[in-house]
Every structure is written in C-alpha cells, then in structure tokens.
Image 1 (spheres, helix red, strand yellow):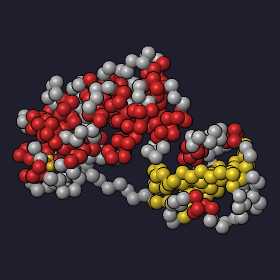
Image 2 (tube, helix red, strand yellow):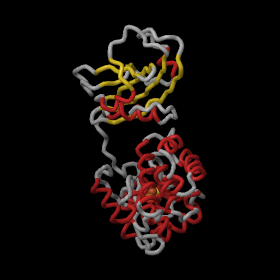
Image 3 (cartoon, protein in one colour):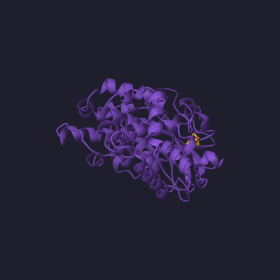
Length: 355
Ligand code: SF4
C-alpha cells in the first residue's frame, strides 16, 4: 500500500493527458474547468473551457457580465443552474471579497454552488492543499484496489473511499496523486474491461487478484422510472403568452403550462411542433425559438422536456386556455420545470421579459 502514491504519480507524469487546466495554478481557471466538466465529457468541456477563458479571462470579467451573457456562453452544456451559481459566486468574490478568491478549502466551500468535491479540487490543484479529491473515477479505482464491495451509490461507501484516499495522500504531492488517480480511472481503470496490464498499481489490486473487476464497484440499480416525453408549444402574441391548466390525475395538477404534446418521443426540431395538426396554427410566424429535450428527474418519472416558442401576429382561434401578460407569468402558478424553460427562453437573447 505504501508504494501506491509513488506508482500513481510516476505513471501520471508519464501518461497523463496534457489538458489546459492542468497547466495552471489559477484558482479561477481551475474552478471554471471543474464546473464545466461536471457531467460533461472532456472533449466537449475543452471547447467551453477555452471559450469561457477567452471571453471572461479574469473573475472580474465574469462578475461584471450580465446573466444573459453568461448563459449565452453556457448554452448547450445544460444544467443552467451551474452557470448561474458560477456567475453569482464570481460576483460575490469580486464585490464582497474584493476580488480575492478564497485561498483554502474552508473558504471555497462558502461560495455558491461549490460543494465538497469542487472545493477539494480547487484547494488541491491551485493551492496544493492536502485534500482528497474523490470523483466517480477515483471511487472505481479505490473500490477495485481495496476490494470494497458495498454499494458505491451509498454515502457511507463514498466516505470509506475518501478516508482511504486521505490516508494515501503523499503530503506535499497530493495534488499530483489526486490528478493521477482521476486519470487512472479515466484512462486505465475504466468501467468495462479495465486495462490491468497497463496499470501501475496492479500488483496491489484486490479486484484483479480475485478476478472481480467486473463485479466491483457494485452499483445498485435505480428503481425504474416511467419515461415520458413532454413537448411544449408556447404561443406568443404581442406581449401575451398562451397557457393551459393541467387537469387532475397527473403531476402538476392545477398548474399552468404551455400547450403540451405528450408523445412517444422527444420532438427534435421546430418542424415537429409546426407540423402538429392538433389545431390550426397561422402559417406566418414572427420568430421561433426551440430548446431541445432536456432530462428532468422526478421521484418516479424521467421526463424529457422540449419547448418551442412561436411568436404570431394574431391569436389562433379555438384554443382552450388563457392568455397571460408576459410580465404576469411570475405570479402564474407553474411547475419549476416550466419556470426554468421560460427563463431559458428568456436567456436566448430575446429580451422577452417573462419568467
Ligand atoms: Fe483497476 Fe485493473 Fe488497476 Fe485494479 S489492476 S486498479 S482493476 S486497472
């Protein structure tokens, strides 16, 4: 066990990828990379990281940007709350902390949207603080190395892994060890068919020795959720939006929403909405905006929700629902998902002024 850190660091120095956020000690840039890379593949995240660094090179640029500007650059990454939190935290650092980024784990943890993982990563990579950085890759490597068979979805298993990494941390070089463990999980100790013959710690590995690399880590199955595709059409005429009230016997009873087409699939583009012949839509539109289906998880349902905004000159006839002034939608009862979709439509540079 004592040689594990040295083996991992030596391997990392020889085989680690040359990624731009590894070439900097700037906590702001490291923070950007960590937030962008959450639930994003490196190839996709790289383009966003470079773009953010170019447009908002310093934290003051991000802090002084409008939310629309930040969201505009974030488009396509999903999870817009991450961008909003990033922006809020940048404003806080710039306005309340006099531009001074927190210098350690405890200070970082106080920033909006920064949890244990991100605070540990910034503290380790920017300040070389001896903190264990435990992401999904590290959990897999440690579970296999030490034969941890309990469910990695459980918090106590993650804590067990964290404790082991904490004990392994080579003081002073822990940032290299953390990077190495994450990279080992990303490149060698991959979920299926790990490349044990290329692994620097294979001699120490429980799962390899016992032939259990497919069984470990154990991840309990999530209870199957009902999958639904909700495709919304939002009509806008002048400064009014059309909404309908949901009936009983389903989620969001009594709340308002745009016209819903629940289907067996997510609508992939504007044409899916326009060609829907449920009612007679005028042929001329002033403009159209579309947000492709995003996944939303409820307790027992997985929803794929898309929305299309069509601005018309005249109100179509025969619709059953209400027309609401844009500036009154805030006080119209609606689900969080609809609120989010409306605010995302707002962020598409339309200056629609509703939420
Ligand atoms: Fe993963 Fe194989 Fe290395 Fe064990 S020996 S840590 S299973 S890659």
